[in-house]
Length: 600
Image 1 (cartoon, one colour):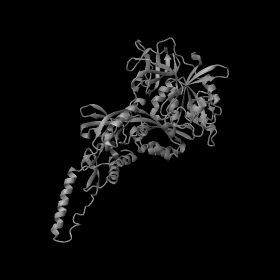
Image 2 (cartoon, one colour):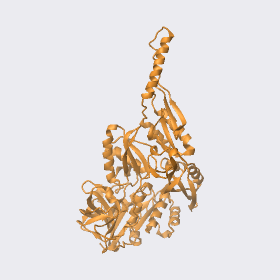
Image 3 (cartoon, one colour):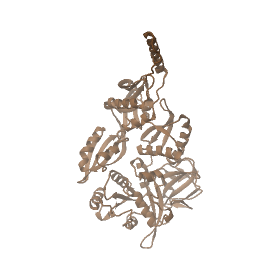
Image 4 (cartoon, one colour):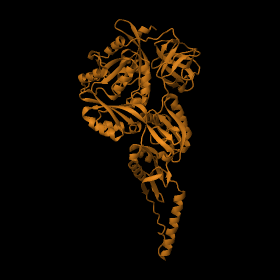
């Protein structure tokens, strides 16, 4: 294929600004998808994507476009995820392109993720085509939204294309802009093979399949390939182009986008961002930007019934075949039994995995409170990264604790700046700067602990800004903070699944809240149950679950009072023995209640 007739581009946008709808119109207008197979969000293959209205996995598709001059062009559309948890996948998809369509909702204007995605595209030196969508809505303010886009990109106002992706109005202008503004690929077709893995998936018949953009050289079936990160050799079984179905070909050359199937057994063999080269090739420089995705949020996942442990392990293994960013390892909790400590990219990723375990594998699970990874320095100078708060050493054994900080960008209407400042300050945010892209909209930048935003931060931001606030963030660094290990004790024994690392100044309040919740959630026993919150094994809050009273003297109808005292004393001794050998079960509702108060 002549490189001059290839255009590789992506569509980027804030959530719900019309990215998938525009992709539908591009496919529909070019006849790429047959009318009988056409549906809303056609590139979103998961039910969860359709229900939530977001893209979870990247998608790519090859479009044949006949221009007005009669020339046929190949347009490779690489769709991207729409949530901040999947920023790395977005960055790798953009690295496979020369251009990006930046969609902005004409009724909402520039949002936080609009800014973040625009910066990603600029970092990858892409040509950005600004598009204003939803111009047919009654609330659309095209002039204001266009001014915000011009301010963000520094482009000519004439370059902004107003469209309605839903009705198809002016979408033809987007095709024209792709052909005229996006440059063709510039790789060397005669050079050594270098192909960027921008996504991967698992197929039951082909194993792990790498979705690639060939940067240099060419690749054919039966050739042997390897990856720059692990050098394991594979023989290509088949390769080809990407439509809704796979179209096998005899060759992929520089500038083209397609798939490579080489019977790789594990999706980890084809990691996003890795470089495919020919086996035996020497001194090949890998494509830049690859790193192993590191989980940011951790949670314990346990089967509701102990006998379902093996089924849960099998379900997680199968999920990981299609999601290389999911990590898990076995762990045992005294409160919840055998389960797994799982690592996720963010809270949305965790919710998706939990939902898929329920829907696709019929698993009933209990998830412990989500938490982040902490960097602990011990007295002897040893540094450990610990994902389970229960395993963090007590203060006597450690020198310091560092927690992950993120750089957060919050876009809000100007009148809510003070309200957002109050909320973020209460969550230990470090204010950096406020910019005003327009007189009515503010971009606020903070450094904030990741643990403060993985629970209800986004919901509260939406609430206090009446739905107009938006958030984007990126990992920054680990910073030492005055933190404490908060433990919950039942009758003096710690419940490991309820341990948490919290700000030292908030330990009493959070410990009191947890004790109160557990008092309501734990059923009454025949003996008194003492609930305590402790820091360094020193109790700081306490609640008591009163015992049930069994009337042991009800059968007595008279006689000496010593008979009653004898029975009551016997009951007292029995309750002491019961308390010594008894075991209090913490119901699943208690864990869910604690999660609702912020997980700390």
